[in-house]
Amino acid sequence: MKTIESAAVIGAGALGLLYADRIHSSISEKCFFLAGPERAEGINKSQFFVNDSECRFKAVIPDELNGGRAVKPDLIIVAVKNYSLNQILPILKAAVKEGTAVLSVLNGIDSEEIIEKELPEASVIRTVAVGMDAVKSGLKLNYTTPGKLLIGMPEHSRRSSVLSSAAEFLNSCGIVTEIQDDILRSLWWKWMINIGVNQVSAVTGAKYGIFHSEREIQLLMEAAMRETVNVAIASGVNLHEDDISGWYSILNTLGPDNKTSMLQDMEAGRRTEVDSFSGKLIEIADELGIDVPVNRTLYRIIKMKEFISGAAE
Figure 1 (cartoon, rainbow, N blue to C red):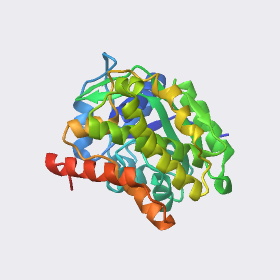
Figure 2: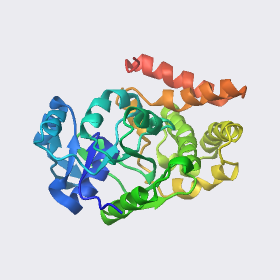
Figure 3: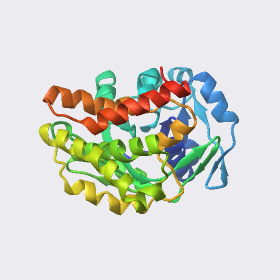
Figure 4: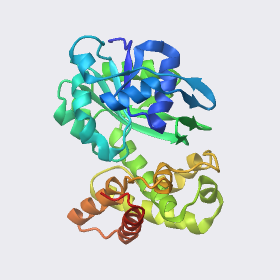
C-alpha cells in the first residue's frame, strides 16, 4: 500500500478551506492549494481564519509543477463549484502523476466521471462530503461540525490499496473518512439531500434551525427528495423511502443559525448549483418518463432568482 505524504486542494471555498486547514495542521508545507496565477497570488497573500484561528497557506501554479519547481502531490481534493470543473481541469492535469489519488467533493453525481475521462492516469475516488455546516464569509470559515467523507470506487475499477491509503491519510489528518461498499448509493443519497434542503433553503431563505422544527418546510424538502428517490429506483440505484426520514438524524446536528451553501450563494448574488441538482434530475427523469413537478418548480424559481440578482450566465 502506497503511503500518501503530500496533498493539494483545488478551491478555497468552505470545503476546500476546511480540508486544507486539517491536512496542513498534520503535514504542514506538504499541503498546499493549486490555482491559476491570479488566484494563487491572492491565497499566498491572504491570512485566513478557521473558527477564529489564524492560518496561512501556500498556493502553487501549474507552471511550477510542470517546471519541476514544485512536487506533484500524492492526493488532490477538488473542492470547487461543479460549474467550475471544466475551468480547473488544466490545473488538475498539470498536478496529476501516475496513480495520484483524486477526490472530488463537488456536489452532484457526475464530476468523477468527467475527471476520469480527462485524466485516465489518476486514481479517481468517488467521494461524498456529508454532515458539515461550514459557512465561509470573506477569509473567515466557521463550522460547528466538520462532517465526514464517504469514499469508494465502482466495483469494476475498485483499487482497495488506493482507497485504504486515502482513508488512512485523511483519518490521520482528523478528517473522518469511511470506505463504502456501495458508493453509487452514497453519491445519490447526498444528491437527494442537496436537492431537498439546499434548493428549499434557496427559495425560502431558511436556515437549518427552521428545517429542525417547521413541518411545512420539512414537507416541501421531503417532496423534492422523494422525487429523487423515484428517479434513483428507476435508474437501478439503491435508494428508498426510509432514506428521507433517516436524513433527520444528521440534519438535526447542524447548527441552527448556519445556512446551506446554496442559500449562501443566493444571498451573495452568486450563481448556484441548481443545474446539477434539479436541472440534472429533470434531465434524467425526462429520459425515464418520470414526472418531477416539485423539482421543476424549484428549478424555475431558483433560475428566476438568479436572473433577478444578475447571477445567471
